[in-house]
Image 1 (cartoon, rainbow, N blue to C red):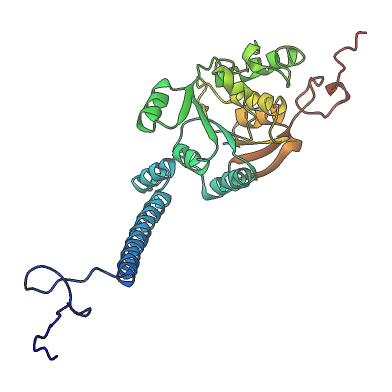
Image 2 (cartoon, rainbow, N blue to C red; image 1 turned 30 degrees about the vertical axis):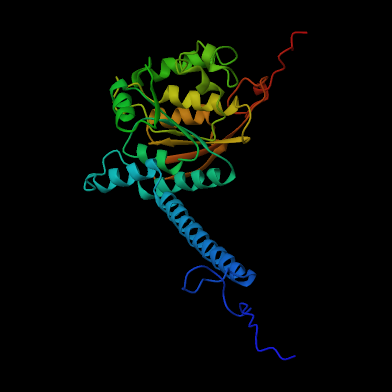
Length: 315
C-alpha cells in the first residue's frame, strides 16, 4: 500500500556554531592561543626588567665614579690654600730642594704602610704635609695655642697640640750642661718621655702621642732666631728619644731639621741625632736616619766605649 506522507528530520550542522539568538558566537580560545599570550607576556616582562636593571646599574656606576673623582678634603684644602697665597714672599718657606727631600721620604713611607708623621711647628707648609700624608697619621705641635686653635677651626680634620716650652736660645750652654749631668738618668736616650724630668724633654703632650711609632719627624719650630725665643733644643732632643725608644713600626726614623746651620740646630743635631746618622743636607735642611736603641745605652751617639753600659753592672 502506498502512503503519501513524508517525514523530514532537521538537525543542526556540526559546522554551525550553537547559541541563542540570531548572531554568531565567538569560539573559546585554543591552547595555542593561550601559549601565545603567555609567551608575549613573559617577553615583555623580561625586557622591562632587563632595561630597568641596566639603568639602575648605570646610575650606580655613575654615582661611584663621581664619588671616586672627589678629591680628599686635605688635598682640596691644600690646593686652595697654595693657589690663593701670595708667592712673591719666600720668608720662612722651604726651598724646592728641601720640599723634594721630605716629600720623597713621605712617598716611600706611604707606599710601605700608613705613615706616622710628627711635625714641630705650624708653618706655610702645614697643609702640604697634612695632604701628602692624608692616608696616614699627621700630628702638629706648636708653641702658639692661638695658631693651633685657628688651624683646627679652619681644618677640623687636623690633629694639633700646643706646647709650653720652658727653654730659651740664650740658655743653650746651661741646658747642654744639664743634659751631660743627667745623660744616664733623666736625659738618657731611651726612656718614656711622659715621666721625664729632663729640662730638654717635652713631656706635656697627650699620653697617646708617646706610644706612636713615628716614621718621620720634621722639626721646623718653635722659633729660634732671637735669644729669648724657645729654640729647638727640646724638639731635637725629644725627636732623638722618640726615634730610639720606638716600639713597633720600622726600625729607623727619618728626622728632618730645618735651618740646621744655626747654632742651636747644628749643635743639638750633632749631640742628639748624631753626625754619623746625617744622610744628606739640602740647602738648610738636615736629613737624619735614626735607629732604635737598646735600653742599656746611655749616650745618644755610640762613638765611645762608655756609650754601652750594662744596667746590672754593679752586680
